[in-house]
Image (cartoon, rainbow, N blue to C red; front, side, top):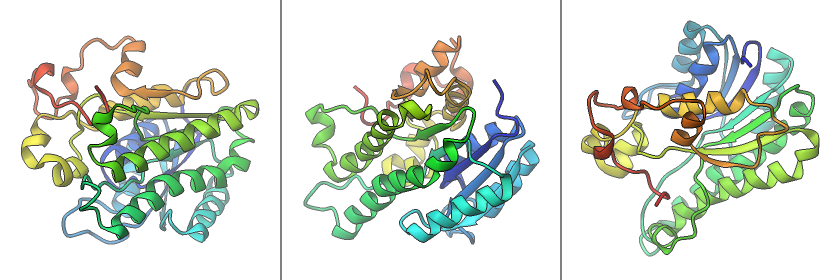
Length: 276
């Protein structure tokens, strides 16, 4: 199955994993609409919705950059309306927008807690919900959230409770939608990497340049997402998946090409959080 002519609506996507997923879809000739806040260059972060749109076009797809915030219901509704007006339908929703803060409970600012809940959990639920009427009309509708398996180990529940709740909330919203709309044939799954991925979140929130060097590239998530989004939606839903496992099921045995620093052995890569 190909994503040629399919329409993807993604939150975030100006950079990192989201952009890598968008580019992989664009290589098939997909249409990609991106709703994100980065309309002008950020002093620390690479990319805007406009640079992402240009990269998508160069990769072979059609692009629609939408300046908006998933915390704003009007922006979500407008993103769906603009996507439908531009491309005539929606086949895929990717919940990529996310905020990270690994502070302990006593140190986590109230505003940051609210921000993580609003973007990660509420944004995932509301964007998915807004697109469901259009997804019901798709031949192979998929929702994909970049969030981890639900691991109730005290190690992760207690490590950074505020952030853990926000990421698990994304997964729970996705699994709930999978169950609720199974009869409509809408697949909803979550995806998480086995190792850290060389993105701005890792660089600025987890461990700087040293962590980036022992990570994999965003393309590992893009290739796994592509494999998931080209599956039959009625038989491939309600799963919390790890990127490497998805690719192994596709026959991939050599992951060396995904190392951020070529030649880094797998056993020297840093395992991502939430996975034992």
